[in-house]
Image 1 (cartoon, one colour):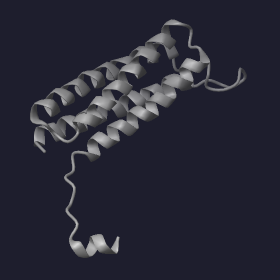
Image 2 (image 1 turned 90 degrees about the vertical axis):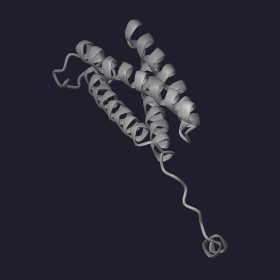
Image 3 (image 1 turned 135 degrees about the horizontal axis):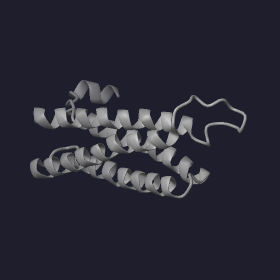
Amino acid sequence: MPLGYAILAHVTTLFMAITIFVGVLTTGAGPHSGDENVVRDGFDATLLSHIHAWPGYISFALVVALIVWAAIGRLRPLRWSIALLAVLVVQIAVGVYQARNGLPPVAVGVHMVLASLTAAAMTVVILRLKQPVARDDAESRAA
C-alpha cells in the first residue's frame, strides 16, 4: 500500500472524527437532545450546524480523492471506499434535508444512524490498508 495513500486515509479518518464530534455537539444543542425541561449546554445549534458541515464536506472531498487514487492504483480499499462514499452522500443529503426542514425527528435519527455507518465504513477502509497474512498449513488445520 503506498504510504501517501495510507496517510490520506488517516487524514480522512481525522476529518470524519471531527465531523462526528461536532455533530454530537450540534445534536446535543438542538431540540431533540432531551425533553423540554432539559437544561441546554449554551451552544448555538445553528452555528454548530454550519461548523459541522465544513469538516463533513472536506471528508467528502477526501473520500473522492481516496477513490480516485485507489482506482488508479487498483488498491484493496477501493470497494469499501466506494461504499463509504455512498453512505456519505446519503448522510450529507439527509443532513441538508433536516437542516432545511426544521429538524424533523425521524431525519435527525436517520442522520445519527448514518453517522455510525459512515464511521464503520471508514474503519473498514483503514483495515483494508493492511495486507492479509498468509497462514501456514499447521495454523489452517488447527482453525
